[in-house]
Length: 415
Image 1 (spheres, rainbow, N blue to C red):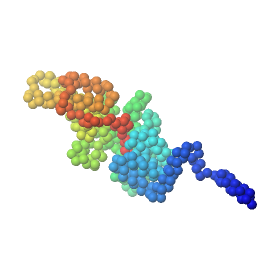
Image 2: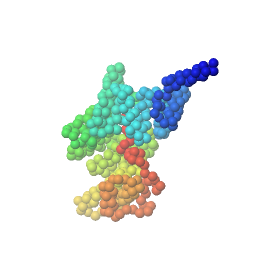
Image 3: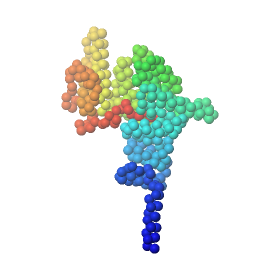
Image 4: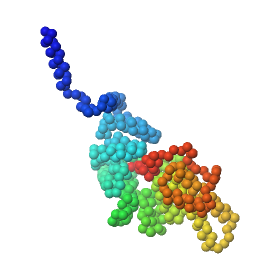
């Protein structure tokens, strides 16, 4: 009897060994890795029991609104742990990844969204366009634009009034004519920059700018792009007309924002980097006074950008040179007021350029040609300002951000 019992026990143990394992997903992992996988699975179940996906996404949105993107990412990932195919969560996580500078993660997330829903939702394609270059970027922007146009057509077909599709700007979930215009601007800009050497690039650039303005004739971005295009083809006067029209659409809002910090006004103002481009075009068109107004707003918003200090000094220098040329042309002596104005311009130029040089060093800027031009201008103006006369916007204990954190050109555009 004892032998039989022993054999029975042995067979039972053998049967247990042959049972299929529930941990097939952890085969080949180290004990520590297996523990992490199990803890993650346990956390997923706990999250699913405690919060719905909608609640998690609501928390995500709250964190994004308060610019706590680290915590937003955690909430959003929990939502995807519960429902991995949630398109809203994927879109939000992609945006959060961009804000955190993780472009590879953003690409992965948006491509997953494309795989799940290739023909619905334009924003993922627009972000992918930003994350790629050349014709690949054109392809993503083009697909996103097609989805936008299809959505607008569907909206028009289900609306009693013919213009209903253009009257939903307050609903961010519905596409608008301005969205289409912005998409065409993105394609046009590629032919003005990355693809400018391709055959027929100039014609394609103008074609897409005209389409952008066709869908939204008062889009400041489209008007400015047309100005850039015209300046590049040496049609400066025509380009200046488009540029001035663009600036007048948003410059009053920038001034109002400086005075009241109105969110409504902020929504009308182009991104920071776009306004730097505006300044360069205004300088090219010799609209120095307007350039100064734009630059003052930029410095008010962020006084730690080397290029803005440099451009501010450059504009003052150019105003001073124009005044000298006008005096020589008139052949007369300066009045006391004019002498004071010239002196003020000179000191302003020196102050701005001194700040540009100091920030260039503190921030570890690698734009050597800019630094050389700053030093050349300072040499002509009498050198750097010393002591309290030169007020640099950055703190002495400032630590430069990483390339991903500090590059304003990579700031994601909202779609």
